[in-house]
Length: 168
Ligand code: ADP
Image (tube, rainbow, N blue to C red):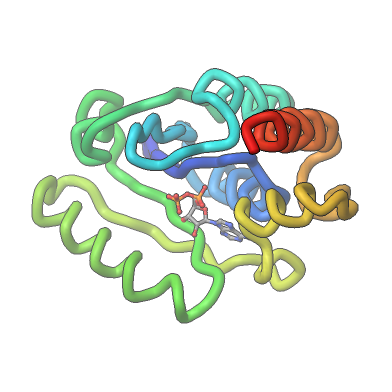
């Protein structure tokens, strides 16, 4: 029984993330998508909103479970009895950081290995940050995020913009 964690911020989930989730879920028995509750970053969506969006877009994949976590990924791996960490690689620019993280995590918990999935070509350019920028300037994000998420992103960005304008 191989249990894996796919960790990330998912702020918001993109088609690139969903592609990795679908492909990883075919390779392992159980895939836990771990949504990082990291106070350091200033996410657009709350942790509960990110978890709910992921649940919605993965509801048809039976071996995928969505959970939030804080603290060290290796501790979350221990708690969930996971032996694999899944990460997506888009470009060489991801590589340095990902290699460093994988080696650090392995040092802290030798029972866990990191597996990298190369992004599908059509999503190689895609990141949550790009999606937020395009949405902020009223661009079309339908090719970037799952259908169920489009309106939530547009609404959230509108709210943020309104709050920003009120405060300036
Ligand atoms: P983090 O803050 O941990 O980088 P992200 O939500 O940005 O969280 O990304 C989570 C994981 O998904 C990372 O491994 C990242 O490389 C991968 N990922 C993000 N976008 C894509 C994409 N378009 N194709 C493949 N993997 C991706």
